[in-house]
Length: 115
Image (cartoon, rainbow, N blue to C red; front, side, top):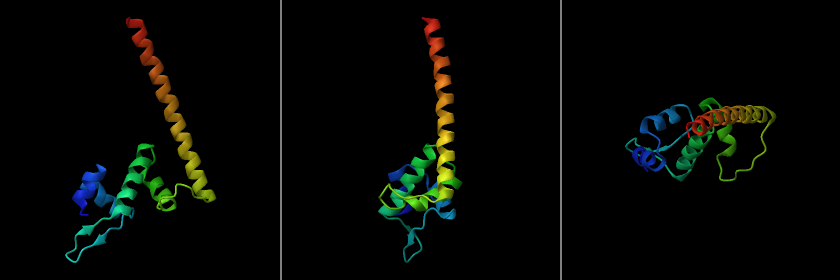
């Protein structure tokens, strides 16, 4: 599929897909006329990038993690360096959850004081 179709299927802009390619996260085939030709594997990679980004991971972290999860098997044995990265990401997510929980409590308190 061409880049426009991949963009439509994944909800990621063409510009961002080109950026992913420039950063080495995507490596599409090229047609004889030089157009990018994406397949199901690239579509799955883009979906994983989106999922990891939505979890709060930076592109740098995703670049380190993605090679370990490129196949369809979600299980892998991370090396010690990757374990530290994952532990750091879990800590960041825990901090975000705590902050959101505190914000929710404050906002809910405003609602109960209004009624």
